[in-house]
Length: 444
Image 1 (cartoon, one colour):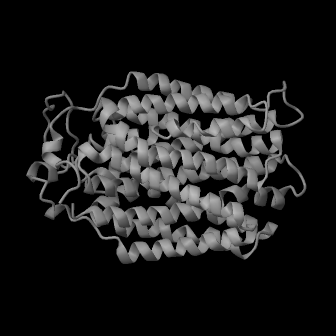
Image 2 (cartoon, helix red, strand yellow):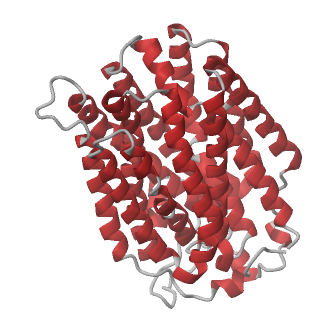
Image 3 (spheres, one colour):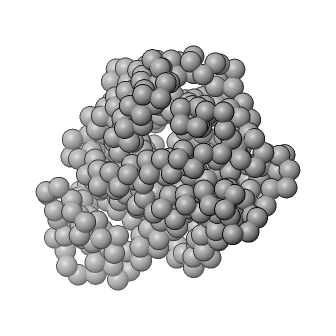
């Protein structure tokens, strides 16, 4: 149990980072609209620029995250965490200084570059750190707790934004981002795999480095070693090493495609449909964030071991498509608030996918594996704005072929429904006794 403080310090870093990042989320739509289309509730330019930013950021994240994950396997999680957490401070500082049109465009360009380093890395590196420290039997709950801490940062940041002016919101956010970097550098320590009492010779030998060509008892051939920068073929080889990993990758893509479409469209849809402003966005995000935090911190530790990741994954994807459909047909301004409560269940999907994948790779490939999943998430984020941003702009304009403002969200819901159907046939991860190899619970 001596590694519990490690998780505590990691959770504090993750909380501060997400507190800072999400504090500005309710305000950014109004800032964008004020800079690009002052005095208007509908702005096609803002929608297209947001979609372009998401696509370019996703492209960069797709290329960088597997590399960052692989480097963290070799040089440590802390060293690689320093880069995204430091870079995240810069765009916040720009808008903390000024939100005039010129500075908004500076923020826009810097935010794209920062997003390439931050979005995927801050997903895969903390999860890889948890996989280093926590054994398989408790890993799903620990990853769920990590997501819960992220949601707690989301809730706290959103709540703070609700009561702060726009100027103070960006200044406080930048200050907290700096505090997160300082805390991480001072308190977070690397996990020394070589000294883990629960890792024997077999488990410490990386699967990617195993020079074994025969299939294992489950018919899956271990991967060959690579020591250079991972290529696309390396990632494909990793994903094809297991039927379960391949299906999990497909689910990660479909789920992320739906999530990306929702995030690219929802706020502009609510702005045009119900004239939502910063405070109403904050209220909506606060409800969703609270529901997600409660779910991950309280429900996931209970349901994970008893129900299993596969069933929770299906439950989460079903809830996801249901609440997106509710958004798309919202007939009153209170309906989005009700729909956001489905996050209690929809939040299950991502931690379950991550946990399933983490159990299929060796202890020295967690960064690479989680980086691959983050890369898939980023690839979906490239496609989702290309697919759904034009659709959103069209159906929110006066030139819509028919009146259905939420049509793009309805299409997003169908993507999530396909993911739910695919999850039903997800096979259970191998029952190979890797718990005996890696140990259970917190590693000593």
